[in-house]
Amino acid sequence: MSQTAAPPCFRVPGKTFLLGEYAVLTGLPAVVATLGPRFGIVPSAGTATGGFTPGSPAGRLLEAAFASGPPPVPDYLFEDPYVGAGGFGASTAQFALLYHALAADRDWDRRWQMVWKKYRTLTSGSSGIAPSGADLAAQLLGGVTLFQNKGNESPAARDLWPLFDFSCALVFSATGIDGRKTATHGHLGAIKRSGIEELSGRLEIPLVDGITAIEAGDAGRLGKALTAYAGVLADAGFEHPGARDDRLFFMSQPDVLGAKGSGALLSDSIVVVIKPRSSRRAGLAAAAASRGLRLVADGITLESGIT
Image 1 (cartoon, helix red, strand yellow):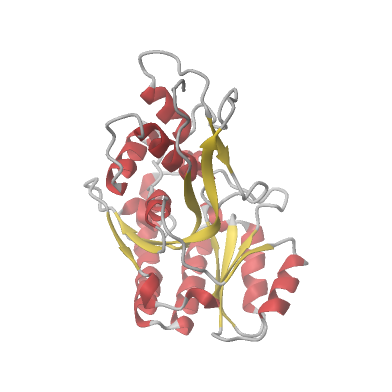
Image 2: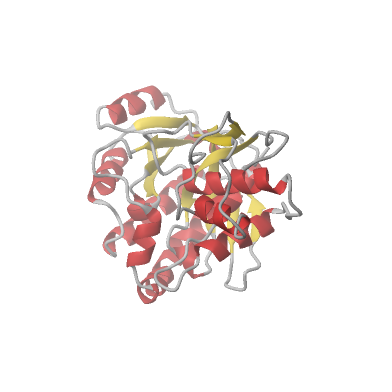
């Protein structure tokens, strides 16, 4: 992108699904927590690609923005603090950051619903299932987002952060383990909507129970809901074997109230709810590290949306 002034810097948080993978594709809600450290887009001396892969959501946004001709060499660069630990929203972060950087010179609406709609337009194809964009909405808004889109392309979002003490939720990255990462876009393109719609009926009970637990500030109930949600996906063949082993390991540990993988096939990360004020956090993190899991969040802290 050739400009007289360098593009502004923007930052956006990482994310992890607490509840709602797959179910959100059928119009049910999802709960997505945002995490630090934050992704960024910064002025650059000029790079060949700017870090945006052609065909990715951000790459498609570049193509759409410069539809009248090839885009000049970009003068911005994507910063990923989670390199080597995928599944924390790099793809949606790229899209959100690039949208805001390009909007600085264009008459683009920066309201989160408009960014989300552009994302949906560019990622919805003729085959497979389009991503929900729930993670994108959460990263734009920050906090812990309750997201829902019932199919009318008018999404709603509400922040659950003030209702629950999320310091009892630990997040571990699993994608440093060989063979663990499942590419979300490819995975969604290979599954049938009819199967997901049938599955959503079974996911709704633990999903609603988990949301109710957050609203009530009940850590024990939330832990049970997370475990039950993962169990439904496991029974349907939507849990990576490694994620299942990790979940069962955590459930065998003292003070653990519940555990669930996150992302496609629940394979990207593991969310673990422990008893509030537990003294076993350090020991649990050490035991997880021996399995190749890296602690990303020792309690989910408040993160703002895009800045």
